[in-house]
Image (tube, rainbow, N blue to C red):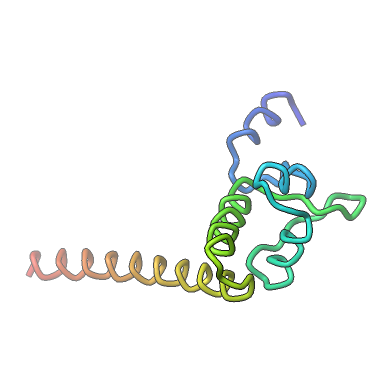
Length: 110
């Protein structure tokens, strides 16, 4: 790997750059919280060659949303389910918008 490749990873939201301890510190939560949302299948951290959990910036944003819900009194399992459903709704809305655009282009060209 070149130095340039290493710098490119700094901008990669999916690169697992953060250890569990660092991720918990950044989120202001505990490592147990990160394990709990992993067990609830909200996020699946990658593992280092030594078996340690590693988190990406994208996963940390999801974990931060879960923490926000839990801080508001939502149980962890419910918070994880809410976030999963929010993500599914966003994806469905994106697909519907694409379908509408394709349909309107087809209607206009007729």
